[in-house]
Structure formats: structure tokens, C-alpha cells
Image (cartoon, rainbow, N blue to C red):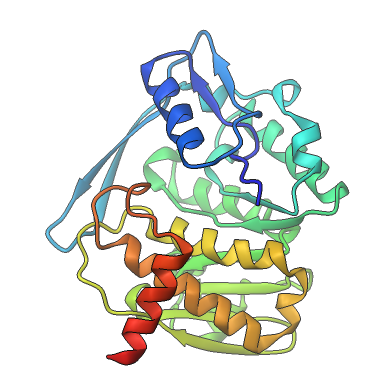
Length: 276
């Protein structure tokens, strides 16, 4: 499968930017859409780990290269090839990146891609909590698939994320699936025709960085292979079990990318867990 960074990766023409591109290539990611900004630096995120493996973030940008992405820099031909167009909310915070983000979504939709949205709330980057809620919800009704964490459900609704009516307040009729991740407890899924919960896996947590991305990446791989999976609950549950395993495995090592498991490693992890 062709993996492409969304929608065009923009980095500074500096050591950090070149390092990131090299890492993507080493991991089999197509970098044809990468842009190097000659003026701005690559954004930096510093992650501090607590004893329980949870994280705190500190960001250095304002402005960084990713914030300055223009619509004219988008590789529209590459976007039109996408089966799944996955995005977050950070690129909605400031112009010109916001307009580029919206233009990329439009082209992906016109090309027949499924629009996948993981808000990935990072409050320190937004001017205020209300600005974050408003910005995140501004494109809510454009998505075909939305993944949120239980914490994000609470933030967006100000309600109890364990209550189904609170979760379903985030539903809209264009959605194929709304997915809520509950950490080590697994995840809950809601579609037009079925709903349920898939239990998670126990793991010795070292670093939770990248666990959500590992989960989503594993699930979207299944979606790209079979777009009809949203209508097939047994297949969806199988895909979510695999995604839960990938998310759990990612927490057992330090670092987001080094901790990502291969498909074979995830399948072995699932088999061993069943045996136990």
C-alpha cells in the first residue's frame, strides 16, 4: 500500500526536516509530496514522560514551516490517488495552512477518497479551549469516519464519555463510523447499522506516544483494503482487534516510530494473548 504523509508534509530546510524525511523513506513512506520551506524552521515537539508512561507536550513553532503551507504547494495529483485521506485539527489553527487543509479535503473528496478525521486535540497550540472546540467542530460534518479518545469526547461535549447519549451527540448522518478509544480498555464503535465494544490488550506501558496513531494506522489499512468493512461487523471487529493490538504494542517501547509493530508482530501478539 502507498503511504503518503498528509496532505503535503512541510518541513524547514534544516537538519530536523531532512531527518524526518529520511525516517519516512526508511519506513517505506512515499515522500513525493514533501515541501522544504527555505524561510521557516521545522516545528518541534518535546515530549515529557510521566512514570505511568503518559505524556506532556511542549511545542516550538509560531511560525514553523507546517503552519505556512499554501494551497499552491499541495500536490493535488497525489491527493487524488488517495483511497483514504486522513487528517487532524492542528492544521486548522492558522492561515495559510487552514485554507490549504480545506482545499486538500475538497480535492480528496472529489477524487472519491474516504475522509478520516482524528482531531488529536493539543490545547497548548490553540488560542483557547473554546477556539479549539470551534475549530475542531468546523469540519466535523465533512468526515466519513471520526476517531476520538474518551478524553476528547469529554472535551468536545463537556459530558461523561462513558454515556452513549453523550458520545452520540457527536454523530452525524454522513458518518460511516464514529469510534471512541478507551485506552487499555479497548474501543467502542458506532455505525448506522451496528455498535459495540472491542476489548483491549494488557501491556507493560513505557511510553504512550504514538499509540493512537498506531491504532488508527492499523485500522485505516483494513479500510483501504476493503471500503465495505463499515457494513460488515465481524470484519470490523477483527480489524479493531488488530488495531487495539497495534496500539497496545506501541506503548511498550520509547518513541513513536520505533515502537510501531509490523503486521506479523501484531498477529503474534494477538495469538499469544489468546493463549494466555
